[in-house]
Length: 143
Image (tube, rainbow, N blue to C red; front, side, top):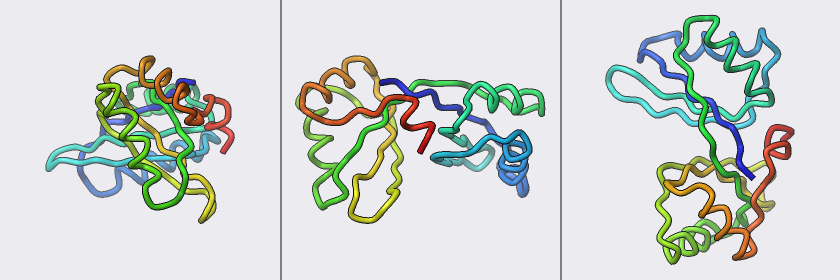
């Protein structure tokens, strides 16, 4: 139920994001989902890719600082209140959301939300027990 995500630390300057995506493209790594957060000096690019090991290796070989973390991917109804329902379950269980990002494959279908929790295993158990579909890593990498 855990999904590996890579985080790449980038200088906040023109061309760095293009360099990352170009490097991954040349290596045949496909980006499935991403989030980019920045400050004045640097950014953190979080990626779900189809081949985490290859992405990690190629980015390090090209001088990037890379970290791997585990996240959880959920299917959430793409309707008003879909996310609210998930967050309510987590709140009742006392689970903190560190960050999240989402994408929708088809309008009207379920959205996929990537979550980083302070208690990853507990969060996954609570969500599954509540009937939420937690995606397996292979399902996410193949999207």
